[in-house]
Length: 305
Length: 198
Ligand SMILES: Cc1cc2nc3c(=O)[nH]c(=O)nc-3n(C[C@H](O)[C@H](O)[C@H](O)COP(=O)(O)OP(=O)(O)OC[C@H]3O[C@@H](n4cnc5c(N)ncnc54)[C@H](O)[C@@H]3O)c2cc1C
Image (cartoon, rainbow over all chains, first blue to last red; front, side, top):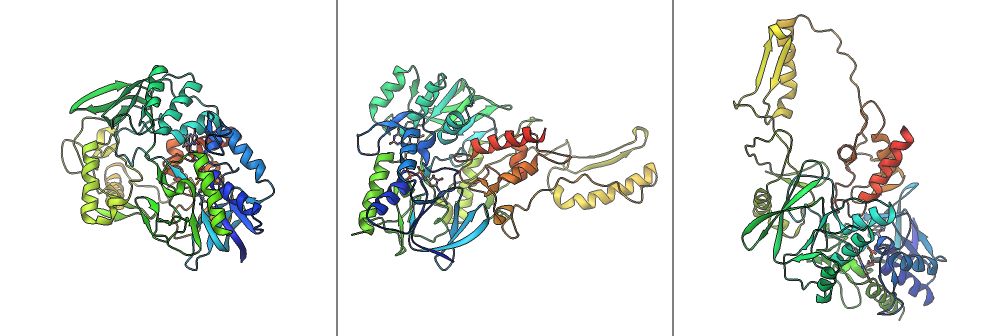
């Protein structure tokens, strides 16, 4: 069986910066497993400004940050198109690659699998199954990687940081969202974001809940509730943003103790198993890429005292 | 009813509501909330588990509650309709019954039925070998669907015509992320496979 000192699962900002810092500290035998065809994680398809490898320093676009990380880690043993499928009963990893499934063991395993937005089903939004309903993650891949233009008059659901990233994506598409809809008052992201939205000409409707999505084959309207009143809003797309969930497939079966949709960790990123660590957005919240990279550097310090 | 599926999920349902709609199946939000509450009642640990997928279908109801199975001598026609529910369980029995009706009203059935048009579908459940276990390129990461499965789905006598069909053949985009990670890749792979095939 293949054995390594350190195996990192996930080649996003958190996984790559951990790998880089470990190798700079002299650790030799590190392997990064990344299931996509290239590393970089979420920033690969966030084609707007707002990413910084250090706090407030060196601001750039997501794809540029991804490219920078790829360049800096070129010399490392990084395996793309390689998926960690799960842990075996003996604590080794089942790993898929182009040639089949292999088992890999390691002295230490680091989870850096990131996070994703909640789907329409998880939000229990009724109505029809239609074209034009998606998360920001899917939208940005369609727009920035495939060059698609999925709709012209979407509604944006949510008012977290990511909802404004969605707004920027719409601007890039030269598409004007009909409105932003949020169940809370606009406080999930800094309030200047809401002003930003209004500046871009998008109405922000607060304390309103998406009930159902209607249409025949593509989205035609959404049904919303605001202070007990039901109303319909015409649109041709629905972007469900935020409500992030840790990418938990490797531990949600109970392999690691977890709570509130995230693995339990100590201040030094230790999970409930002695040789397994977790870092970056897999910890449950959406942090900036810069924060995740800083966490990676901190974890490297913990592992190489 | 709360039951495990062959894909390793738990499913809760079904419900039934009368509707005049003939084409468009739609989920009623209040029913979804009720179903989730019922599931949690039955298995409290589900409280912290997200729902992966929801779906609705139209059961073919008629004005009567029983099935309608009838031969119409003058029209060369056998009606087999109104099979609202339990249709899967009864399908073999219904087929035998219809064969008898045919023999009685329209003459002998051919000894050997004509060859069926099969569309091969890869095994989709973990109890037996699945394509990803032999390698290849995984495109849908939640359900571990490979590119070759997507290519196969658009071949044969009954190719998947759109992404909906592709989903049902392969389970691509049907897992926990519902497309956050892979939907854009899956549709690009689908388009690419279609162009390669035509
Ligand atoms: C729409 C959007 C806009 C954003 N905008 C900004 C912004 O403007 N500025 C900013 O600083 N931050 C922004 N962020 C946040 C930033 O993208 C994240 O903080 C950062 O990507 C987190 O890094 P990560 O490495 O923890 O996770 P990810 O980037 O999600 O990387 C995880 C990696 O792990 C891989 N992986 C997962 N499971 C497995 C497995 N089983 N086997 C192998 N590989 C696996 C994934 O393919 C992925 O490459 C945004 C996020 C989103 C979604």
